[in-house]
Amino acid sequence: MLDNQLRLHIGHVQIHRRGYHANPAVERFFRKAEALRQQVAAEPEVRAAAPRVLVHGLLSSAYNNGGVQLVGVAPEAESLVTFIADQIVAGRYLTGEGSEILIGERLARKLEVRLGDRVVAMAARPDGQIGSEVFRVVGLFRTVSADFDRTMAFIPIDRARAMLGLPPTPPTNWPCSSTTPARPTP
Image 1: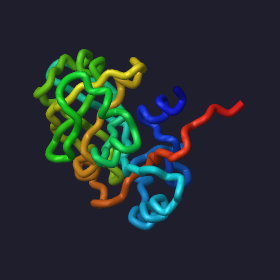
Image 2: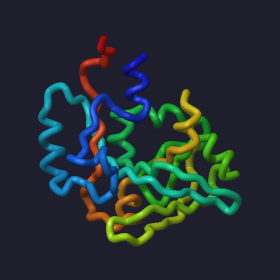
Image 3: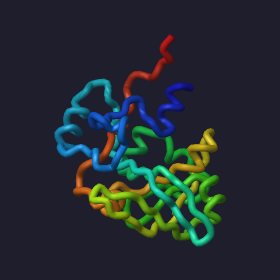
């Protein structure tokens, strides 16, 4: 059960730059992402790792808006680390192509959107400007967590980087899955 909870979104381990938890700003991305990827891949207990860009932002429709955590993902890598692709109840998972977005059913209800509708994502960029982009809803997910379903939105990592004015390769974190199942500590 713990392993399933971790694989919903978090992964067994997450790697962030020093200071990220005290100030989870998007400018705390990894500058040497490829070296980090190689180091993580060399660990024998790491089954998979996925680059992400995380940022708090606003998602708006023609009818409503809401605060969200935008998660820029590499869809294929993400599906090896988390179960979010398995939680889709309508539409499809991300392909990584174009301006597509995957949101929770509860967020869709709040925004009054359906599959195929457009939403606007906005978030602060490292240069102090506001980045924004229009996305088309391609999938809806439902998990065991109402809060998760109301506040999370997944977009292709390349679109997240472009919207935020980030260089082409750096992620802000790397969730990893382990070859060893998670066990609760006493």
